[in-house]
Image (cartoon, rainbow, N blue to C red):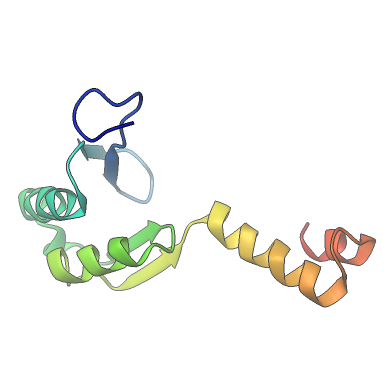
Length: 111
């Protein structure tokens, strides 16, 4: 494979803004890099007046670039939360380390 638009697959970065009852949802996406997504997130947060919300929480995987872009572009966030899928990977890994790989005790701790 080579660089450019004719690769077999593409990576898109997506960010979603939504309220707690999930009545309002706004999605931004880009085929650009992390800095492009950061600028889109900052612009959209400004349009939504995110800084006026009572609570502002980001849920994302643990990638450093995501955390960095959120800190730079929407610093008014109150908290960063690791998404459930990636959190459960860490729980499963810890259970395997503590109780043995794929043991019954590890499975019990990961349920």
